[in-house]
Amino acid sequence: MPAFRTFILVVWVVFWLYWMISAVRAKAGSRTRRTRPPGLLLAILAFLLLRMFSAGSLAVHAPIVQAVGVVLFVSGLGLAVWARIYLGRNWGMPMTQKDEPELVTSGPYRLVRHPIYSGILLALAGTSLATNVYWLIATAAMGTYFVYSARVEEKIMAASFPSAYPSYRTKTKMLIPFLL
Image (cartoon, rainbow, N blue to C red; front, side, top):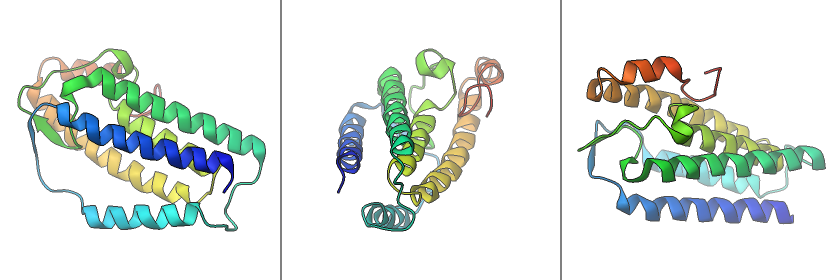
């Protein structure tokens, strides 16, 4: 396995370990409703990981494309970690409502309303460009899930912060600065 693919795998593993460990410090909250089948998501992820590390016709071989992919991958995870650190104890699993919510609108949240989702999607797109185009399937699937999650979360935020959230929402885009 080429060194950059090993690098991407190791960084993804470290990222998710950090994510799970740091979740322990989050404020208590409640999930609004069960909206995702974790077994199915894990099966899809396992399939994609197997495809990523197998030789195939959709593997990326152009060094410049791979380099761009690694830059996007690192930038995306950097954005997600920055947003996660900035959010602190206010972080929660998708579509959860915190017991004592706070509206965070600075740091990466001044650029987009959901920078963690943006960062993970950017990292997935980078993974696709650096390793195997099959990762675009994961990027599209996660993008669909994140847009749905963001819409649910925005309803929660609008109800929790009826005077502040609408103006914040009009000033910032959901996932991509200046576009979406």
